Image (cartoon, rainbow, N blue to C red; front, side, top):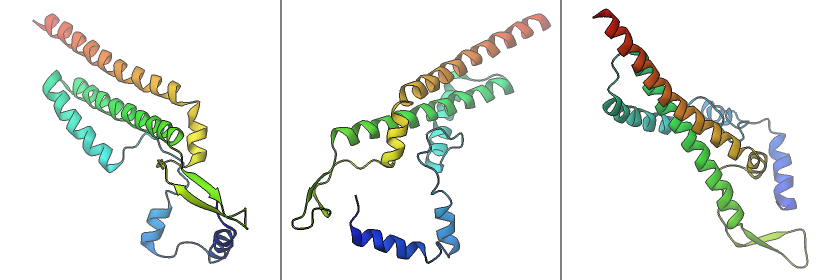
Length: 168
């Protein structure tokens, strides 16, 4: 909850017309994104983590053809998306278990002061509430995609082995 003074400042700022600098516009273009756990694209950090995981998987699975290499990438991507969903769920749980505590200021009961700062999720409250029903389903879907990608890898490998056997 914001104070009346903050609300009036927000109204004044809204009349100024928004972001003017190219740097500000670059940042603000993502303002409409509520949480991002469902996005297909990876952030820079996630991409770096995916690359590391993909290198490990390349050593583990030793892909023998292009399709197997593509599938190793799908396995790594599925893993990153699953981890993203789990992190978002953890934030939701932490925000519920350790909320911030406020108290009213006398004689103005509309003004609140922070007594104890709780865990502040990176997601906004509305996004956390909207996602709460979808977490379990989404995480289960990510897990399914992850294991399906691994199964597909071995299916491709089995087919490649059968093709190689027919050629000899």
